Length: 253
Image 1: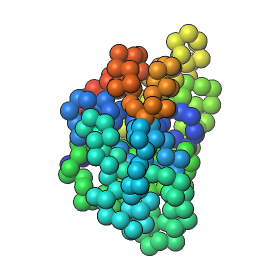
Image 2 (image 1 turned 135 degrees about the vertical axis):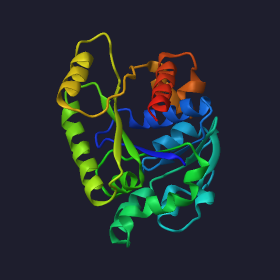
Image 3 (image 1 turned 90 degrees about the horizontal axis):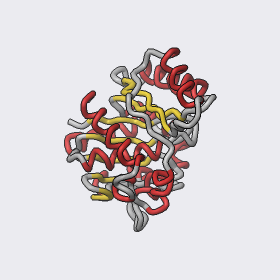
């Protein structure tokens, strides 16, 4: 039975999609069978993992709106041991449709029931907002990973996403847990990154990953080539960091 994990933060630019792609790839490299669901209308996980694009494949929008079967939406072997359900701008329309749909808040959970036994991990890359898509993802998940950029406003954004998770726990998914808070874009040349980490640790009692993802040029370049960092530059600091994160996740799991 797979673990379904949402990567969520309503702030953009915190490394959420970067983590979704590269954690999936690092776990696949380690022999785990992974499904990555792009649940963001921007489709950045899709373009960041598929160098040749979707080639007319059905998307997560088609699945949750009942227009396609799950098997028709999965693109196999986007990376080693990693499959993906892609997304495109059509998914933005689902936000309106889900509000008016019966059981709309649990559409994704219902759609994934038949496939949970086929993967070790299912990751959901949420949009950078709090809305029907994020609520759907959290309702379908066993746990959430919250990427947090090492910047001054980290705590402000973090409190909002924790509040959203709390509401979903109360109303839709009592089993939902916070797997961990992940610090991203760490810059060891400044004091700010360390100050942010210490501030969050002092303020919150949530689980915090020991692995910290650094700022890394190669990590930033990889999506434009449609590759995870583990194949784009396997020996880079970014690749090693995500391998460490994958090992930590496996140990905790």
